[in-house]
Length: 346
Picture: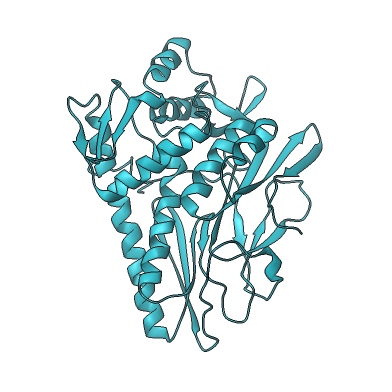
């Protein structure tokens, strides 16, 4: 099974039926409302190691089906570029070249993802880092074995990770990889970037109202006809109170945490999400849901917020305009939650 551009989502955001809700929870942008005479067309396909569902409101069934085909084709195209599991992808070939003897010019999509990853790394003080590949590989081995990484292996992997490991030349659109043994890991941003691009392809085909659900990385455009937005239920953790329903348009939402992907080693619970600074999984149980204007940002910021946790994460969230988050964590038997400014009211 191909598991490309893959971040195992700890928790699901379940998309509900598009019933009318208060427009007060709608997100930012200047949407063009879909016409009430449109038809709803949806399909699900396996892509990038997970199930992708695309839903559109089109003027007729044929137009909708053609738009879906174009959307899925775009996701397939990006998988061939951004996958770190496909050795022939553009990203994999770039990683293998490390350390690059000279700068390498890359395609527009790989460049756009790397440039945004670099920006978010800076704004998150390294909590999100696309160079974390050597550490995620080592941590997967620990999850399988049930043992923490040996100190010498952890030190070697950490030496290949860091912000200065990727040097971008914006004018030439070239990339230099500076550290031996480094590997780019798009798992915390690639799915979101692909969802954004699919939404753009749908808009280019005249689809005003659409939803792209990449197994929990969700991007939506204008509200479905007769509604105030796409209704999405966020149910972060087992034991949490009933999941909150948020209503979104021209926005994205994603959840990151350890409800489904975790390991217990020496009596401690660790997430599958790796802290780039320690090389170990993030301590849990905890989860964070992020709402942002685009899915690229939501995906990467949710990963960074998971690393920083509910105490330090809100300060990082505040650095991103019109981004909000809900943190949920368990302390003993008690489940607590907090939200940052801008989070939709219940």
